[in-house]
Amino acid sequence: VTSMLSGVAKETLTPPLAGAARPSGADDVTVSVSVRHSGGEAARHARVEVPLHLAGERLGLRGLPFALGSMAVGERARFLFAPELGYGPRGDAGRVAPLDTDLQAEVELHAVAEVEDLSTDGDRTVLKRVLTPGKGSETPSTGATVTIRIGAPRLHDETLVP
Image (cartoon, rainbow, N blue to C red; front, side, top):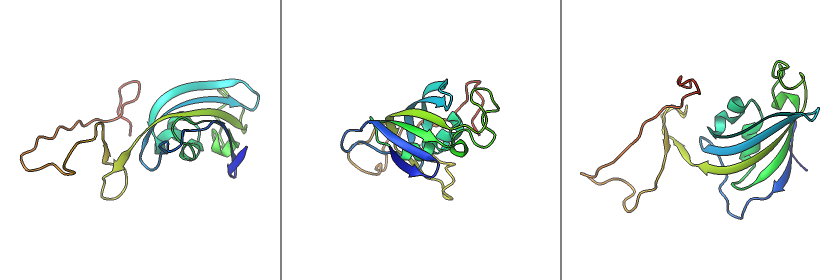
């Protein structure tokens, strides 16, 4: 077990391949997360693609972005989160886990998609994710055709994510 930060411990279950990508900054990650509370009951399991900086908020584990930042693609690890880095001081309102409880999460990092923050203030309001790298010139030449796709993340009920 490797201690990472006050309140988080990591045990590597499957190491990544040498040279595997590591997430950082605004990158999107595809990750599987299985959570258990200290009583041993499974809380939930999910496989999602999510921006690294929103992983904790979207999956309800405040320390998850830090944990993912310590991983590389193909790695599977078990993390132990203290209550303040798990569900936080209010817990999950007793729905799944008792208040003020440690959480154990088994996490597998499947993929990292590099995302570049193009916003002038660095506030992530304009992000660029390359879907297919181009060939040749780094910048399109005059008269070149460029195809872009603009999208906004949506929740399950189709409302825009703030």
